Amino acid sequence: MQSVARVFSQAIVQLAERDGLVLPAPLLAAVRGAARVPLAMQDALWEAFCRAGGAPLPGLRVGLALQVAHLDSAGLQLVACETLGEALQELAEVAPAIGEGGGFELRRDGAQARLVYRPRMAVRVPERVEAVLASALNLARWATGGRFQATGLGFAHAPLAPREAYAALLDLPVAFGTACDSLDFDPDQLALPLVGANAELREHLRALTARTLAALGRSSLAASVQRQVRAEPGWGRERVAAALGISGRHLVRRLAEEGLSFKALRESVLDEMAREALAGARRVAEIAELLGFADEGGFVRAFRRWRGTTPARWRAEEGLPARRAR
Image 1 (tube, rainbow, N blue to C red):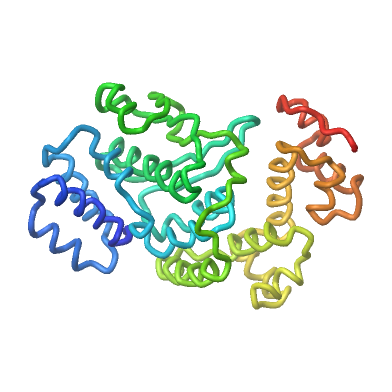
Image 2 (cartoon, rainbow, N blue to C red):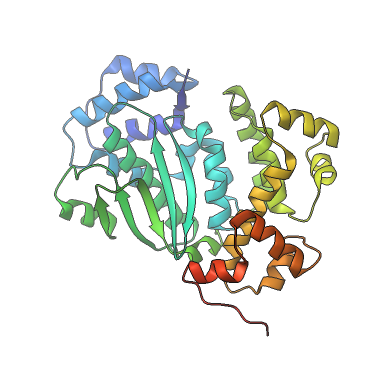
């Protein structure tokens, strides 16, 4: 049964109380008594909240009112990351611990970065999408000490109120009827440090979130492998397996059960890291060293296998300036 964290639901209840809105007493009692709130109950809560007759754009107001504690241990884990980019990468993995009503994907399209949200709920979808992306915007600003600057929000639905109402609440451009629901920003924002960065606390919270995900049936060895490769891209199968507390043979068998291989997972991470680095100021030789290749030639051959072109040509095709050797 799909569900959301109770503290996330409590954010809606608290906003209703603050605004003097009356929600059904049996529904409130059920939400407060649940260890996790079933998605059907969350649907009923959203429907009651939106019908209660508060100010326009209820979803947007919920999102902007959300605090990190409303995202349970997963939210605290994210703000303990070193950079915004790391937090957004982990968001895609830990989001089910917060709520199973949708999923995230961090995309980098040349000079544009985009946090895409894919809703999987059926009730009050526009309002809830607005809540999710407004909360991502608000918490990114908070976690970076106000340094995060988005270029815009894109919503697949039509506006729910006059555009001026969105502008007054968000202070950034908003587009409607887009191909996907997304928070858009420049890629350099991914390097912003988080004010709450704490490696020791992050690892503790990761363990708590992992238990939640395991209880939900969302635990994935593949996700753990990808995180480890991103942390140590030069490591091979045996060292990654040791870091995860299993043997290399066990790692191969477990991944095979998920229909995956270590090599494919590792190369997918290296491919992504390579494109991230190529979008920045690093030289190709530096990127090769960063990713654990013995020399630049080995990296170029691998990149050609992944992308069908060389790093230099990929930069040119993406409209990025070439980085010359110093």
